[in-house]
Length: 384
Image (tube, rainbow, N blue to C red; front, side, top):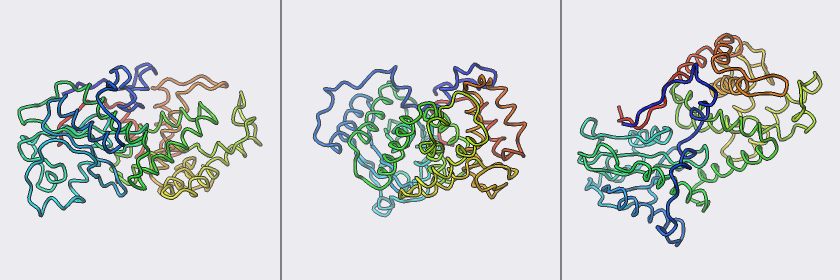
């Protein structure tokens, strides 16, 4: 399979973008899909053209584009190839729990998921959802719009085929499908609407304060990976990731002379700055579908020992998503240069996080954080 990279501890901070980035952001070096490959006849037509082109260019048996819908359910939006013959009883179970759980796990991965049915065959309902038979192996490429997962680009291959010949082209086609979803603002469901709102708020924060916006984007992936490691539900992971991206949205309401002050804040200025979690929570509560995100944003400056703000929550009174965010937010701040202090090295920042476990931070979260920081970033691996 694709080889992984080494852990981060002891390496230079130039490696940080690798930890924080998404696959789509690394596609720039691979080139672009030629414009003449596709003709515009509406977004649904474009997705079908991408599926047809994938079968032709990648020499695979079939291609399917699955769009993430509310409740973590995946809906087939485009398909090309010969579908496997499945029983009518199985084919109607599109919300089969095990099938959807498999897809939810795959869409949160950094790299494509490879399913070798010679080793671990799918059950009948999983095969029905993916429209494949036992004699096909599968690649599931996660599709994201910026930081938000929006679906899966699936191709099936012959059982003797362990790797797609042109993986770069597969990445590009998956990214092209995600771009269609984003560019056309497809009104498929409330879930896509939430994605658009989250992205718009993120851009608004970047426009207000570029450094804050970049900080939020950088910590989003690490926050998500910790949530996955701790076994959070798919719904909770969605909320936790969005809270990471938008946790400082309340700084939109902080005066410029405080937000952009070239030095440490005085006591009066800190009182005003500490209002940003409440401001952010109020903004997010006004948006349908983001109430859980608002709850995490409100609590992201609480401390495990109860010394935080604005509510003075302690221990498990603090939502787990906020406890994760507190650790990653502090880490991101420590390794970033400030006008009044230089950035810490990664080992120094990790040591400080560990030192504050049990006081500022949940020890369980710190343990997961430390593991993730040291974890190699692997490529596509078979489903266990």
